[in-house]
Length: 137
Image 1 (spheres, helix red, strand yellow):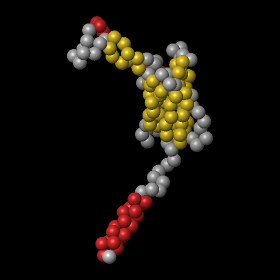
Image 2: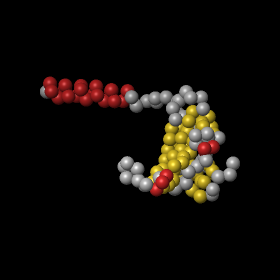
Image 3: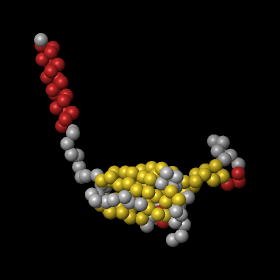
Image 4: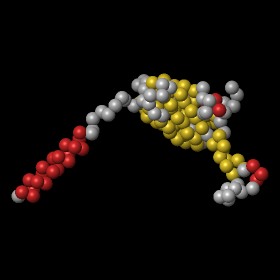
């Protein structure tokens, strides 16, 4: 009988501890999704980052697959960076120490990634956020 009571008390304590962490844990996050094209074609595979312009909160990223992405972001003004990589032969055409004969290089202009000009304001009523990238400035 005592072991049954002890088991019940322990179960209640564990349940209490588990439910204590189930409430809201911070500011709301909003779902952002959309499409990404380059010169009119969906980006087959790449990455998208939403970086907080204030620098006060961390970045979020998502994979772009078949021209679509989806992520959850805190609200606010974000700098958007997009990368797409392509495989090219190594300089000189000779294998490196690991035996590779190709390497991955950024396929998008810098204005979409390391020197991004893309921005978005994440808010509760943000609808699909698409990005149509081109080689032309």
